[in-house]
Image 1 (cartoon, rainbow, N blue to C red):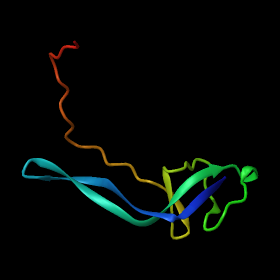
Image 2 (cartoon, helix red, strand yellow):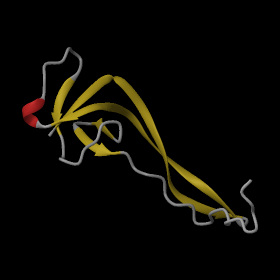
Image 3 (cartoon, one colour):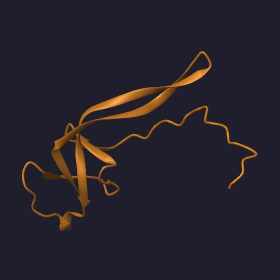
Image 4 (cartoon, rainbow, N blue to C red):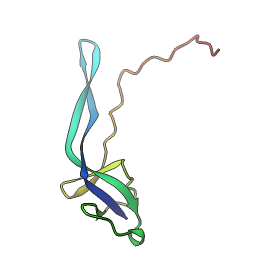
Length: 98
């Protein structure tokens, strides 16, 4: 598989990496990945096509998906998902659908 990398689309990716309990309240801990380049498209090796600079194709894993992965420092990586909230909102009871 090949990923189409767009070096003009540089972004910082922020996600909740963990949660800390402070005075009985859960607060998110954010982690930021700086200077990521966008993976704009993914194609099988035999279906790539010519692209204008500065775009370029880069080898990637078979499960790579556009916009769900990023390119940084010569590597393609999946964007981390937020850590689950350890204290989710309670499910409401006794509500009606109108």
